[in-house]
Length: 303
Image 1 (cartoon, rainbow, N blue to C red):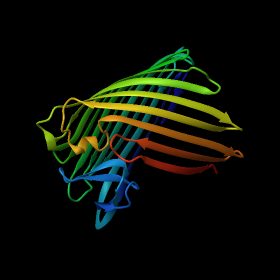
Image 2 (cartoon, helix red, strand yellow):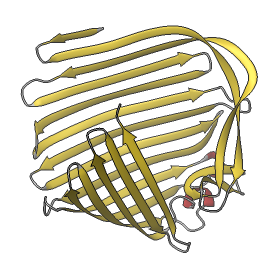
Image 3 (cartoon, rainbow, N blue to C red):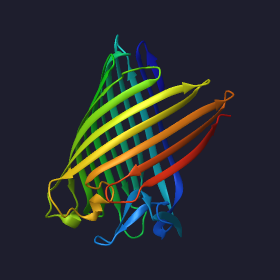
């Protein structure tokens, strides 16, 4: 379906098919320290996702096949009256052991250096394809972004729920605000300050009422090079404070209390019309731990 009338547009697809589904399982393999993306929490006997970890997750398919009916639809709506723009996006995947529902609505008023935008979204995934457990994840957030000349503001409320069967593995609510100012455009220099209040919960520690305060300071410096190339340097300071002592490793492994310093350098350069090379270097100094660093080289080629 594809329909347009003046400033209104709607596009949608609907699909139903049959396919064979394989049951799956997972295992965690220990690797060199700092090269994985998971760490093991001995208290909860679970693996926690974190960059610079010492485990990697591997998913393998079992020799069990089952024919399932798959239903999918996707709808996108756009309406642009005068200086406003409204967008909606809805995606749905329904199979016997897998369900994914995503919806997002946005409203933009104004344009350029004078605008305000509100985005409301929800993402729900229920997965029963694993042999040992069922998983479900839900993310809800509302985001308000405003621009007034050189001043940028961002306010957000977000809820994240991660379940294993009927157990709440992690539930988190974040309420944050950020304010940035564009000092120069060429080269781009933009300092930012932000604050986040978070509440944390897990069925592993159901008797604990955990709250976290995060202060953030960041400065972005960027300059264009050549045709389509760019270099950006971001320096960031994060200070986290919990409302009690003895916070479990399950939470602090990703967000340790105290001051964390980060530096990120990214560069990209285009060769011809279809090839882009990019390099990213990230270094982090967490409190009471060794520094962590990564480097990534990527190439994008358009055919």
